[in-house]
Image 1 (spheres, rainbow, N blue to C red):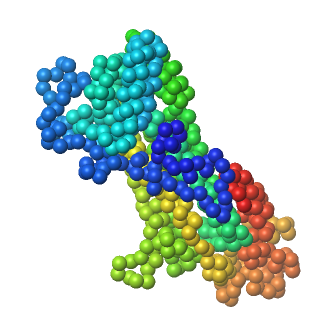
Image 2 (image 1 turned 180 degrees about the horizontal axis):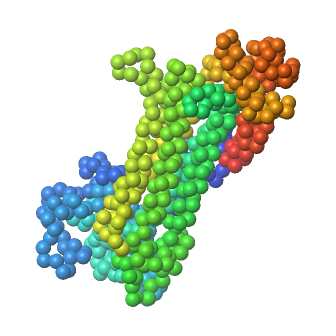
Image 3 (image 1 turned 45 degrees about the vertical axis):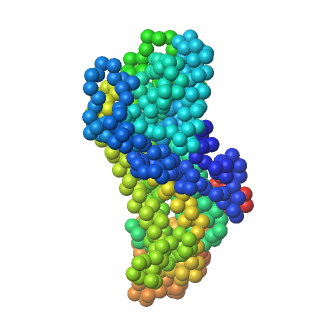
Length: 523
């Protein structure tokens, strides 16, 4: 996370390189630090905007000649300029654009296409532009269209003729894709840190609730007893797959388009491997047409985010249900709850409802970009300018969802008494009773029928399986013996689970140990 880590994230977020304490989780600053930077989409053009755009009438009426305007006799109309500009949102690529330009200038000098003095002048100018942007002294102009033209034009204003050589062997087509891939790479690193933080929060919550048995559900009907730790770790496993998808995506996007130019490459003796290495890419993209056409990396990134959002939505649904009066299994702290403007008794788990709701945005960002790319001819088309806002929005949203889910996990308690009172209902030990019959030599299907009849008897008597007398059980099947009661009741049922990955206490303890070690949680 080269420049993005140092610029967007406080030092306290560097927990991925050190162990994490289970008793005191590290401060996670995505929403407080990185999130606003990732999230400025079509920023409001007001005085307090962090990177304002000057689209005042004075600016629009005094347009400069476009850097691409040599063959044009007229300027575009104000309506066209407003419609086609992208500076209002792509300015957040400025660090990556400047980084790419530094690498490009160094390569041009190395190949003798510009002098060393010109390279140094260009890099000093880019450093000054970056300083001005970060101090708020840089004016973004809509008549300069996008982040690339704003920076290049400002560089020409600052250092003159050497700046005009910077665009040698480069097009905005390969330039923007280089910036975008760099940005996505840093965004993936940020999301991976956020996923890890939520995993730590979930494992820590599991550690605090050792031995607590809860009803497990299928079809939202009571099914079998499970350890709460086991249920929480199921979400940790989902998050691990999310992290794996993002890591895989990062490998595939980490190829450099720079030097592909508009679509055909260049006749100038550039060294694409040098720029790729300088920017931390694995290699240059092999095919120049593919290099400027490809948006697979963005689609894959959006897809990975959408799957993560679905997992977070399911977590939100679980906790919203469990916080309801009907369940009463979970009580959120006041710090992660909201009230009603009309009903004074209400305490709502709003953050997780919004997590559930915001998944729609992340899914929508994927669908938008899939639709955008459908049917486009090779190579670059202006339609592709619309690829950035969905990605920016997806990253902003998923980072917020991950952070608030972690905060919620740190600020809930499970109502043991309510849960324990609820356990006897639903015949959660029925399947364990069927396993008992299998151990007695009864075919499973026959045992299934016997247990079904036992449950039917309990329904008529309004009692639990463990309340049936041995004579009552033997009236259904003579196979039952006194040891059957070692299999009945939620706690006995839990103790009988022994298969790999099951909810048995020993199995879950092994899973907990695995995650504590993997996530480097200090106990």
